[in-house]
Length: 333
Image (cartoon, rainbow, N blue to C red):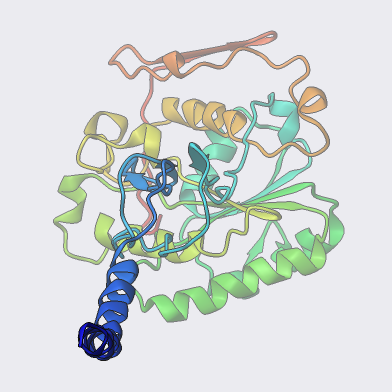
C-alpha cells in the first residue's frame, strides 16, 4: 500500500513539474532581458560653447542630439576630443595700400573734370600727365580734345604705370545706366591701351549740405549711389577704388563747409592735402621696399584745417596757400 502511494506522489510531482516548468523558464528569460550590464565607463557627452563662431566643442553633458541652431553640427556617433576647434574660412584680404613719395606719380595719367583740374593746378604731383577739363563727363570723353589731344591719343602715345579716373559730378543727375555704359567703356579702353597699368577709380567728392538744397540732382544721395556703381568695377588686382571723402567729410557725410567756397570744390590749399592722401594710398608696383624707399614723412596730423591756411613742405618746395579756389563756369564742374 505504501509503495502505491509513493508511486502516485511521484506521478503527481512529475505532472506538476511538467506543467509549471514552462512558466518558470519564461519568467527567468524575461527577467534576464530586463537586466542590462552596468559599465564603469560613461559614454562621451557633448556640449556646445556658443563662442560666436560656433567652432568650439567640449565634453561636459550627456546629449544625443545637437540643436539645429548650430547648423554646422549634426548628431553623430563619432567621438570628440576634450576640446576641438574648427578654423573659420579665411577672409578675403583687403588691398594693402602703401605710402609712396610724389615720384610714384611720374608715370601716372589723371583723367577727370574740374576737381582733377584742381589737382593739376594746385596739387603737388607736377610730373603726372593730365587729361582733364571743366565740365568733362564720361559720355563726352570720346569727342573731347584737350590741348589738341584726344583721350585715345593720350592712352596710345604714353606708357603709363597708373591711370586715375574721377568723373561723374557733371552727370550725377542723369540715368545711372547711361552713365555707366560710357564709364565702363572708358575703363575697358584704358585696359586695352595700357594693359600693364594700375587703374584707380576715384570716388566723386561729396558736396555740402547747403549745396544739396539747390535741387538739381547734385546731392550726396546720388553721389553715393553713383560711387557705389563705380566702385563695383574694382577687382583688387588691376582696378582699385579710392574714396577721398574720408578726409573732407563732416560727421554727417557732407563736404565740410570750411573746405569750400562753392559747396562743390575744395579750396586751393586743400589740393595739397588731397595729393598727400593719394601718396598714402598707393598699390606697390614691385615691392613695398622699393616703392617706399626715401619716402618723406606724411602723417594724418598734417590734415588740420584752420583759417590760417595749410602749410606743406618738401626738400626743395615750401608754400603756404592762403587763397581760395573756386570754379564758376556756368555750373559745370
